[in-house]
Length: 225
Image (tube, rainbow, N blue to C red; front, side, top):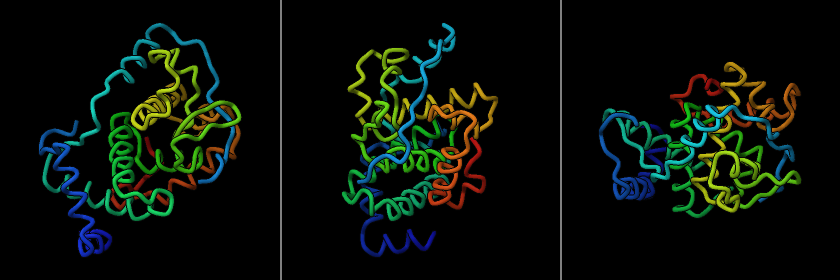
């Protein structure tokens, strides 16, 4: 067990994390502030019907973000990650329950989209500095600064839902996965698309730099998606 986990266990916080996860039904089954730093936003582009349908399906499932694992070791690794990230996030999100809910949701949505949790947290830091109700000058909303047109293209049309935690993280992760697929796995170019600055280095470099802070021991290559 990590040193961070031992510290939290000593203060009773890890027990609280475990109780919260147990209440959420975690099982041992297959793995299923400050102003925004960058004011760019995704650019609306025509989507093929098949792509639109796939993206719509990807954001439609509103199931709560309850992680499940293949083994006890995998679950303990997750608890250690949650403990370490909670400690690192405290300065930006002091309320314990809110912090744990956010991290659990971010972990779930990142893994669901096939993304590194370090990458997603780094992007959130750069985009909104973990502010739920952040709005950029371009109109992008929430933690992952999702542009409202996505609610019309692949959602139910209600852009106000982009201020909801799971909805915002779901859309953000699905959109980043979409841009990665468009760019054949080129993360640098995909991040540029996400910010509306494709081909420019400042934003991708900022996200990749920020993601280093959120790298856990199991993520040896935190920028791989």
